[in-house]
Length: 318
Ligand SMILES: [Zn+2]
Ligand SMILES: [Zn+2]
Ligand SMILES: [Zn+2]
Image (cartoon, rainbow, N blue to C red; front, side, top):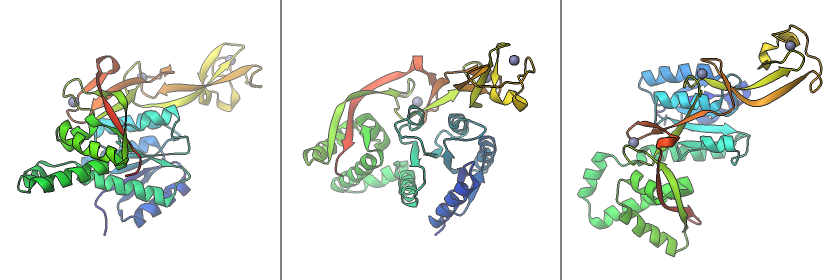
């Protein structure tokens, strides 16, 4: 049976793009778009959303024209609940990658890509889509016996634990739309049979308007606050002191003094780890970070973050 969601593959290697397309077709997706650059991906994404579609995005961490965080932030601006799977060959523990994996909104796919892992992620995503309890379902539950309700709630708590691996009590209670007491009763059972363990209390970011813990981090240029940026390499030409992007040194000629740069370390040096803003042209080392609440869609900065403390649980054998 064909799946209703459209899929947007953002991948600069045509070979990997085709491979992913084949995999997704095997999984039953029929509307698949492939984009090789970040900017074309954003255009396609906005088109699909304006047609009332909810594309699932497979995003490559390394793109030629744009930083993955920039692409992600721009998609979040259009559709705060967009589901993105990040593909990367970089370690899951890498800080840049970690930043992108937030609260189950993003799933992570390791390169080289294996069909089995993609299938697993897509299954979780499809389940998650039907997971969040709808009003109609809550009304439906009132007709059931208390025992049936408890079983259903417990089954969903198990699913949440399994799909997150590690999750806070706050988050479970919020996603389930039930009180912490209800959740805790089931967690205690799971704990007593060694299926999960309680970890130390941790603080997590919550919305300063509605108290929700379903928050994503977005990134932008510290100067103009637009979110169209990419990683860049800079070259410093020692003799004239010019300091600009590598691509400005056309044919190895310095854009300022027009002389040729010859030997790295001798007459010039390359500096990595900088971002360039495609809107205002500014170069910076740190991205400006804001938070977006997926429940009430309010935005706030790190200074206005409300920290919420609570226990976390980790799956051992569930
Ligand atoms: Zn120069
Ligand atoms: Zn800017
Ligand atoms: Zn909120």
